[in-house]
Amino acid sequence: MAKISSTGKQFTITVPKELMKMMGWDERTEVIISKYPGKDILFIENIKKK
Image 1 (spheres, rainbow, N blue to C red):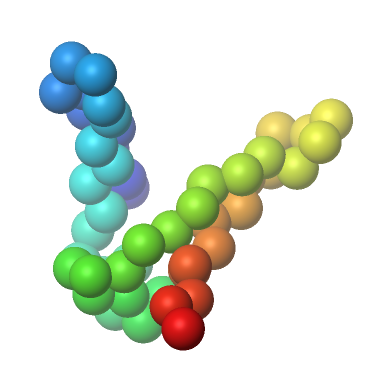
Image 2: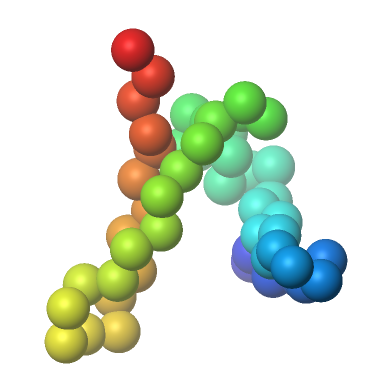
């Protein structure tokens, strides 16, 4: 389960290591979190670097 914490002006999302491995992410990965309009569905997408 992911955990959200506040550092004052920003929020930090802590993701379990198993989920990071499953998604193919590492500590340098940047993601965008967006919401499907009109639904309670969130998308987390990896930002591809050129």
